[in-house]
Length: 241
Image: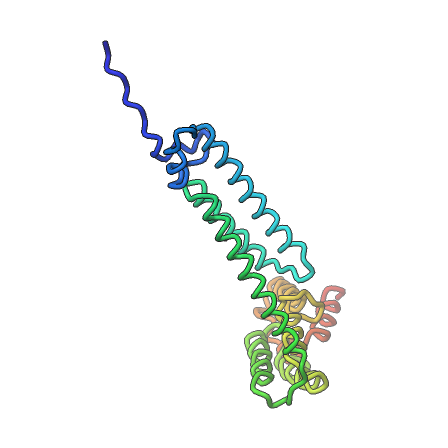
């Protein structure tokens, strides 16, 4: 008679292709109970895994639909959740994953409190020479300096934009206002006066110059020095000519 095939140890991690959960150390301890079967342990584990999945979906939904929902925050949370799911799939006990989910919730709750406190602090009016406001002014100037080809270099371009920001900040000297205007300008928040429409305008000017073999639009002193309105008017007239 052929030798009987040795029975596979129940403590080995099962193949994941059948969709059955792997046995964690806690499952192995349960199997030491003579009244417990592999089927019962697997069923219990499936229920626990479902609870983990439900908790994760609930957490993601709350993060995505809350009044202070943030796309990057939701994406980071989703990646963190997928990592937990993978660990559970390859043998981590659902009990341990639930503990870590609870820790994530506590951490996020603390972060929300800190964010609200920071948001309130950023509403406070400050002296225009306060270091944090000066830091925002430098951020604005850096954006202007790096994008003079898009916004122009004179009083109707970068220089004018720098002066405008200082004037507006003097009227509303808060970190919140400064950050909002910077986000609108650099495109973090879509805005008709931001860099995006200026970039589109410059690209159209490049196409026009290429059509007439003129080279770079910046070869024109008018375009180089002037800003959005003047460039748009120039482009319109050129197209209609």
